[in-house]
Each structure stands twice: as C-alpha cells, then as structure tokens.
Image 1: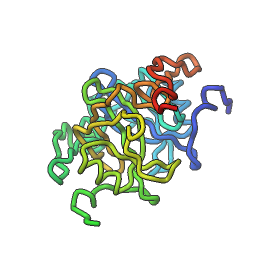
Image 2: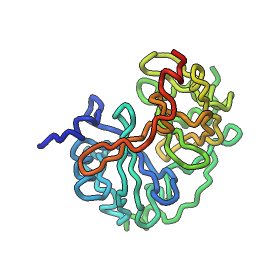
Image 3: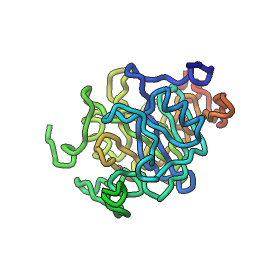
Image 4: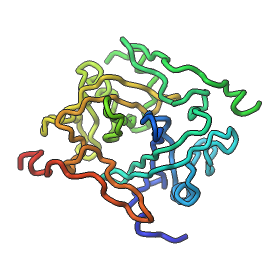
Length: 130
Length: 130
C-alpha cells in the first residue's frame, strides 16, 4: 500500500478510523456521519463515490451498493487537527439514512423532546428490497 | 443530576462523549467538530450557547470564553443512531477555528494534495490577545 503525503496528514484514531461527515453539495444539509479507514478513504478518492468502514459489519461499505443510493463525491476536506473529514456529495435517490429519510439528522430538540421533523421517503423494506 | 427523557436518547461513547458538528445556521457551512459530555450538552441547551468538552484540557469549554467567538445555538439535532449531534449556530466574529479561519475545514484534497483554500481572518495571537 502506498502512503502518499496527503494520507500521512490524515490522523486516524487508534482503531484506524476517522469520522466522515457527508454534506449535500447543493443544499448544504448534513446527511450522515460514518467512519472511514485508510482503504475506505483511498477507494473514495479513487472511485469518486463514498466508501465507508462499517463498524457493525466490520467491512468496507460502498454506500448504496445495496440500495442504489450512492454518493458522488465532489469535494473532500480535512479539518485543522486532521482528524475529521467532510465530503460534499451528490446523493442518489435523495436518501442517505437507513430509515428512509434524506438525512440521519431528522430529530430536533424542542422543549425537552426529540421531535421527528423529516418524512420517511421510502420504507427500509422498499430500499433494501426485502 | 436529573436525567430527562431526551438525554437518555443521547448515546454517549464509553468515555462519556458525543461528537457535535457546528454548522453555520445561515450559510450551512460546517464550522467545526468538537466533543460534548452530558454536562456540556445540558449547559448548551440551558444557556443557548455552545459548550463543549475539551479533551486536551479535560474540562468544559464554553466556546468563545476567551476569544469572544461564542456560538449562539439555534437548533440541536440528533442522528438516527443517537450518537452524533448537530448544532445550527450563529458564530460571533465569523471565526470558529483556532487558526483564525471561519471554519476548521479549510483544506481541500486537490490532485493528491491538501490545498488551503480559506484565508486566516485573524491571527491566533489577535484572537487570544497574547
């Protein structure tokens, strides 16, 4: 595995991961936060589509590989500490969240309660064809 | 310490922290990512200004307490897994990053290099008056 200079500035955590925030490139809405290991980041850069590391399944996760809801990556940024990445993405199918919503951030704190403010666009069954 | 229902839905990590993404409420720009423990989150909610947990200093950090660059919080969201928070903020002084830039995400990956694309608005010395 090559280790180009840009990769050496990315500070993966002790378990080899870095959080990546996917933001809609047009609306600016924050869609989701997931994790990348070095391979996921390299594949994201080389393919132009978001590839994450699924901690629950312990394997690379090409976002949308099952659902078709891939994320085309327009821009990758790194923060001042080098330990968080942002992706500007074009989200296929307008659904980033496994609950069938546009964004994983669909709950707003309102007078001491988390209020669900965004609609389910597709049921998870529809998304995953089960 | 009271434990209202909304707090019980927030999944802090084993070390008691949750990442919080501060996003400019007007432009949608992602300004920074920091950590909160339960007290930081409670103080953010009760004060209406962002309070984080500084891992390096191991203490509560009322953002802007030294620099004046406080963040008024317009909205707090929680993701589907309950383990990431977003804040819609109004950033006083237009500087969120300790380097004196608007955002911590000022480096863009461009042809295998991290390119600095945002200006330093104030030097850190100016910010912290040292």
